[in-house]
Image 1 (cartoon, helix red, strand yellow):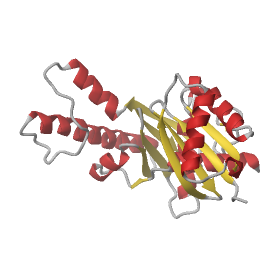
Image 2 (image 1 turned 120 degrees about the vertical axis):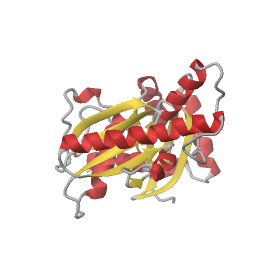
Image 3 (image 1 turned 90 degrees about the horizontal axis):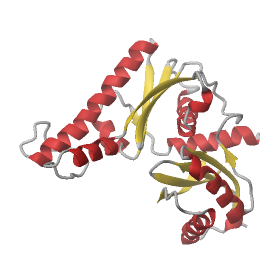
Image 4 (image 1 turned 90 degrees about the vertical axis):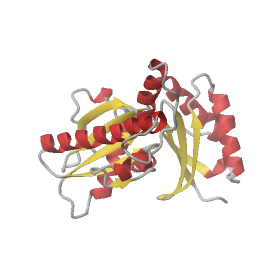
Length: 264
């Protein structure tokens, strides 16, 4: 009989990420586009096909948790789990046990992904020599900066337009500027339109990240470890002076932790 697995589902505005854990180890990860027009049955078919590619029987999945920032997709994900595996998924939201106090003025306004990231990030530093706080920079459709206090409290943060959104606005509103790949340019000083645009997009965003992190740390008044996650984190982090570590499965790890805290 296959070893029991936990299915974690991170629903974003651009992508849905499915992760499968055996114990504390992430053994499989699948990424699909967030198609708002799909039904729960369609999502179930896609996920079953992905599992079949890895020879994973549906009976192996005995637990599931969902974090969604797209309200229209939350119920289809819950229905997907019910129909595909015959179990009820835990949904990250008000009333769920996260293990961290939420100090936001209205806790219901905080995106589920931001709370999940905070849980995972604080777990990374808990029990280490670090005595300060944590800042998580998540490069998603929006780029979010989330602050966790040294006591493990979610304090709040910053929401900025994502890199792709910013670039798309530039391409759409400037008639003579072509669409370019978001990639590190050879030099900061562009000698052609392509290089100039890439420099502005990439190094401009690096400046945004480092500037905001510096202001956050100054305002918080204590040292912070700075972690990054999300699709474009590997591009920006090596150029940033403030980001210390990229963790591309931070959200999935946070979902696992929250599931375990509620299962207990």
